[in-house]
Image (cartoon, rainbow, N blue to C red):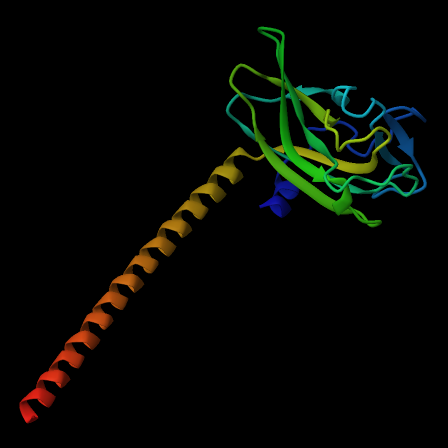
Length: 220
């Protein structure tokens, strides 16, 4: 499904490659020594203190239009920071998602598409992705990245992120969910039939054994 999404859907994320990012320090900064595409990528650092520092949230780009009840696909390429100053805790992670806004009420909502463990990353770029469904009455969204307030997410944990892609995937997602449900129903039906056949065969074997026993008794 994800392979066809990029071919069919427009990228809602403005500057998903962080080419216009000019900051050189802090939670989000431009990193040019390595990148997945373009001339640079994002270096995301947890600058907040470990645990007590709260969530370390960052946002990128302008708000784009979303719609309540619609499902969106979120994708990014990530890799380990070659200049990391702390060894990632085995359970440290960052969140990739969308922050949505309801202009009607002024309320914000944070939707996580994927939680990515830092220890699972390597020195090569890899794709991570996930889906979110926007609640009703929210019609604006923007890229959201976070190092949540968690004892495992120590201060100065870092990661490189590039090539963010966000698109409305509602029809494709629903079609895939329907296909998966149909496949599951067929598998269950076949399983039940096999189990029924298994019982029949077992009963046949029991009857045969009984008849053989009766023949032996009669012969005796």
